[in-house]
Amino acid sequence: MPLYEMLCITTHVPQYQPIRELVRQSAMHVMNSGGVVRNINSWGTRTLPQRMKRHGRPQNVGDYWTMHFDASPTTLKSLNGVMRRDPRVLRWTVLKLADKVEDMAQHGRRIKPNSSLQDIID
Image (cartoon, rainbow, N blue to C red; front, side):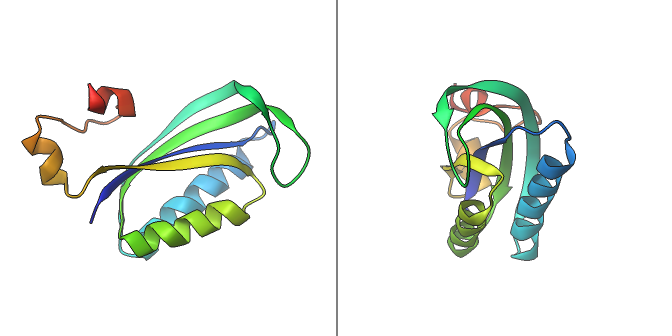
């Protein structure tokens, strides 16, 4: 299974519960489809680089989080459908880091807990 990293920007709400539920829903979707969630990181609340609108009014602030996971391409396609339909999601992107974890090791790259995509690429 390929190794992916998903970066997600969600609408900012004062309570953490809606974002926590979205992260849990995304992770459970991957795991229920036979995938493995390796790491979840919260980047916190940040001002958006530009106003973003999706499923409602324009937003100036968003909550950022990432998830590293192994999943099949069909699971990735269905996860994109889940993110597309969810009103809490402003933007998301998924990067394919490697076809296999062994591919990362062959190129001298290591995946460590709390590492960002920039740490893996460098």
